[in-house]
Length: 179
Image (cartoon, rainbow, N blue to C red; front, side):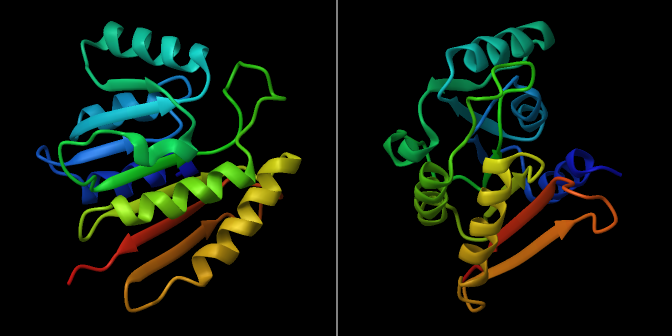
């Protein structure tokens, strides 16, 4: 099982058809497509190419999602029908795109801080990090430091990484504990 398959298992156990998921970094649309099988989805990306790629993939599969060209740091500007049960981040760069355009620690930290306040009770943040490139390694380290400081009374935090693979992608799963 790879990191993508593992995150999808997490998502399947969490989401129900009446739930809302946000794909905060829609990229080429594969996560959005998968999420659209489980719940309603709002997806965003700062790159126009990512929005076009996601639209094309969804159309080819007969699926729908609401798409916005938006920096994930502005996630709180979305008009939502209700609190999302899941907010997904697949960090790094657009596969097949310009590798110099990547998610950045500053905007990612702003976004996840906002996202955690938006979650429904028993909701979760799913953050896939890619430490194989410079900015990805910086993001992973800082996000783990940020997540370690979350109150254990309010959050369950798991960091999954493949320890026998250098610079393998890792997953931060951050679950909000219901009242």
